[in-house]
Image: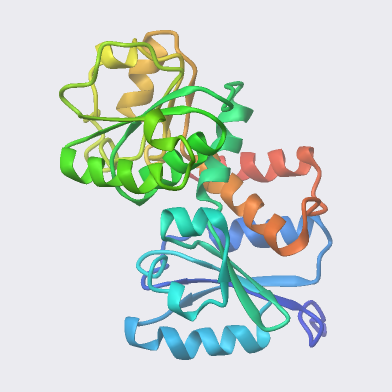
Length: 288
């Protein structure tokens, strides 16, 4: 039988990375394309660090958009024509749209995180967030909560790194610095937080018995989100459940940031119903 699924009119998308053997992005995006009856295909593109410029030239000429993962989220920036406010604040890109040959950078990780939290029944507007970590994921999370009028406390092993992050993020909001606090992981103030966000790798497989904070800290929070999704239920989420606190797994962020990426490529309506998205997510969950 002649396979007519991919032809000259098929829109092409990709994810760029140095090692993509474990990526779930093609499965998620191609499933969303299928659900929308969209003539599009999404491919993993593994490249060496010395080939980034030449590969971006190819993508500019014949791909409608692409995602970027480690180690290219920052290195892609010089090759883009434009970036949005979130990228300027966070210094990283994970989604690129090709608008008539102009490459425009976005970052959808934070939006995906917020969508996952909201689907877990937890509000994200104007809240107090305790964010563990001071790396790229923590920066994105902090930016999104600040942009929604929230107050953020960064708790990290390296207080100086957290302090630099605080200053840099504070400069992106007119009153941001007044709404950012910094502490170390072992000196978190005894206060109430609407949500705890884990942006560290602590608890990730194979070190699954570790938690970045104690149960006493968890008990100070109204909800807990863990960006780690292997295992699905981390030690941190287990502590939250033991306290009867809403716990939200990181897999939802992985899925929702892909949905947000498609919104940058196709507009707010990506042509996939909420029910179809939930079914794709359930199938993804069953695989992990």
